[in-house]
Image 1 (cartoon, rainbow, N blue to C red):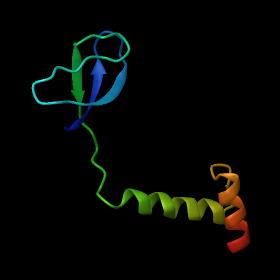
Image 2: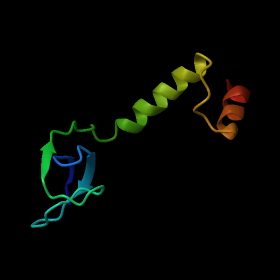
Image 3: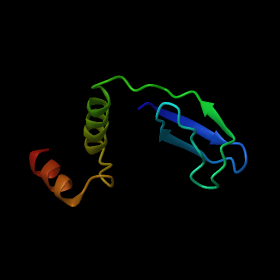
Length: 80
């Protein structure tokens, strides 16, 4: 099942949903079927985890650790 991004024409909600063949998606907020399909930017397979890990290492080096859990902060400070 492909994952598509939509924008509801009635309530202007943007959302993504899995769509089965032959199924008509509806807005999760208002239930309208008046939707515009949006263009989604693909994520390169296997790269997203590497990009996130790299960004987190850089943030830790710069001292921005608020997005890490307490256990992760402790490990980074010990191994740092």
